[in-house]
Every structure is written in C-alpha cells, then in structure tokens.
Image 1 (cartoon, rainbow, N blue to C red):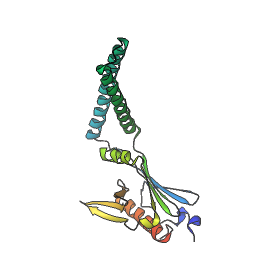
Image 2 (tube, rainbow, N blue to C red):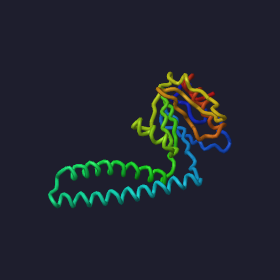
Image 3 (cartoon, one colour):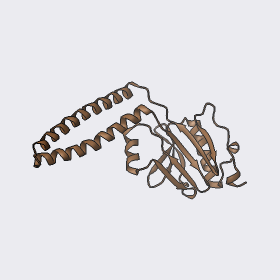
Image 4 (cartoon, one colour):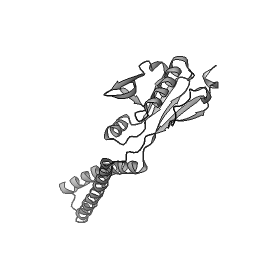
Length: 203
C-alpha cells in the first residue's frame, strides 16, 4: 500500500484521553496538540510584570517623543536631537517586541504540529511561553522545521533527569512533544519511526 492511499484509520489507537488530533489533506497527515497553559503564581507574576513593564516603557516613549518634538519646534537639530531620534528607534523596536510577548501570553499557547508527507517531516513548534522558546523562534526567523525522511535516523526517546524526551538531531537537538504525556510521546515516536523506515505510518 502506498503512502498516498494510507489513511488515519491505519494508525495504532491513540492513548486514552490523548490530546493529539489527527487530520489528513491529500497525501499528508497532520498530528496536532496544544500546550496546556501554566496557571501558577509564578505565571501570574510574569504576566503582571510584563504588563507593568509595557506601561512604563510606553510612558517613557511618550515623554521622549514629546521632548523630541519640542526640540524640533525650536529648530534644534544638534546632538540632542540625534540622540533622541536614535533612542526613539530603539524604543519603537523594543515596544513592539514587548507588546508581542504580552499579546502572545494573553492569546494562549499555540498548537504544536507534526506534518508527515511523502518525503518530509515538517515540525511546527508550539509556543511554551518561555524566554528560551521565544529566542529559538526569533533566531530561526521561523518556528517551522522541515526534515527529509532519510535524515531522521537520529530520532530517539531519551530519559533526562527523570523526564522522557523525543529528540532528533538537525544541526542542533530538536525536541518533539515536550508537553505530551509519556504514552502520547511513545505513540508519536512509533508513528514517526514507522513512517521514516517504511514510508508509511502503519505498524
């Protein structure tokens, strides 16, 4: 049976209570799950601090913009005006970045997706709202990783400090399903292993 005619019915049954959702489109299979939000005191403090920081930074920008307009109104285009313009550029970039973080936290976590096609695995990283995750997304300029089937020989389950992880190497160590439960992660590993070795996700 070829990859094109395989359906989600050929998959092994999902673990009970699994959050993984399946969908097919043409010759691709999409596995998707959402990172559960972290409702904790530390999460509340982070969000409150971000909101306060955004308010203070916005106020500072308004004050500096007012000062800059006053200098231009006096036709003062010397060193002070140059410094204020430079500061305003830095402020604008920082303001947009901080606003993005606040909006993203309010909007909630984005789903993580694994898309299996004839020859490629496409991993769309979920957002766990940690600084490390955010920096990784910014550094890549995209949260999507595309890997050829033959390049997944390094896919493995590892136990690190009591935590099971599904990893593969692609220039760096990439983790899939960080927030899945252990049975879900093992199920996902079996599906990807089957697809990588046989060109199908049937056991």
